[in-house]
Image (cartoon, rainbow, N blue to C red):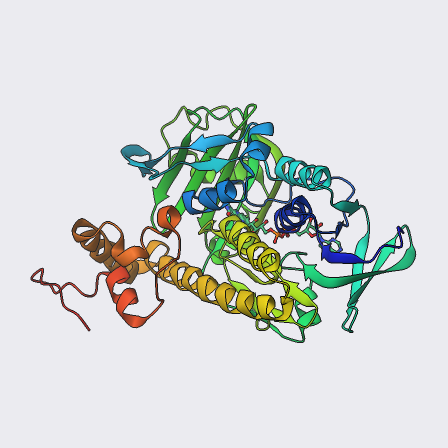
Length: 406
Ligand SMILES: Cc1cc2nc3c(=O)[nH]c(=O)nc-3n(C[C@H](O)[C@H](O)[C@H](O)COP(=O)(O)OP(=O)(O)OC[C@H]3O[C@@H](n4cnc5c(N)ncnc54)[C@H](O)[C@@H]3O)c2cc1C
């Protein structure tokens, strides 16, 4: 233990913790990051970031870190309907980006170190003790140690339970569908494209990670996973989705990592900050993985919190402002995730009808009031209210094509 008292102690060296640590250390703050893993491995986590998250990456000055791991621009979505190519949708106004998650974790943590952050790894954060001098207890090599800091930031992910440290609770939305997949080799399609294999209401997603690897995801339902066993067998999963693309795409695909599926539920902490502590990233609130907004939220959290902490010495006020802003933009993403589930993954004739109604509304307004273009433009300026819900669902258009307002 160095014996130093830190400005900021961060628990968790995932994308959120390492990025925040690096940004604050770059600005001259004394920062320590405590990460439990010695080396990162494939946990079936984010490997693409939408354009609005890429704008955050650029504003944080992280583009060179992505370049250092050969991250790839994602410029278009190629949609297949029941195995036949249907159309290409450009990803605008800027491309998204794809990368291997574990490689990005390693690179960001090493970047944070280069900016001057101290990294304690492997070590597990155990407890937070609120005080005039906030303290965390950590387990390093079986020995318990204390770290004292002006501020503790928990960035330990959605399963960590660190939301109790602010005195709040964690809320989990009901499951609507499941999302998961596997790293593969041998897929045959061009880099720069997100392939969407539609077999409504299910969807397979496929994108290149470079170096011969690709990520294959499937949005499906728990009862289908139970019936088919595809969550337990790569061969079964491959057979299930192969015909959703043209034959050459997955003809030679081979498993290259673990296979796993997760409920789509958004989860969030009811209290994001308390004196001496803040939550960021997935432990503050995690988005539906099938919407793919998790990392964009992570980078937005880091920018919002770091700007506030570096812009004022009144950190109590900074935390209060962060909590309000984080709640507001997360609620927009959460509403979008719910609505997206009901339309894109809606089952039966009702689901078909919702999709047809939405396609009709998109012809009048391709952004669906903004909620249909969050991937590209982000959550700013949007309100998750009934009027926006009706626009997203196309319910503001009467059967004779007239637009109505509530
Ligand atoms: C199947 C799936 C697919 C997804 N796909 C996408 C996608 O394509 N695009 C997207 O934007 N988002 C996606 N997401 C979401 C994205 O992965 C998360 O939003 C993002 O990883 C959150 O980063 P984080 O740093 O907050 O948490 P995590 O990635 O969970 O990192 C937490 C870190 O804290 C460490 N830690 C945990 N407990 C302790 C402790 N007690 N002490 C010390 N360290 C600890 C962990 O080892 C880890 O390194 C997906 C999620 C899932 C489940």
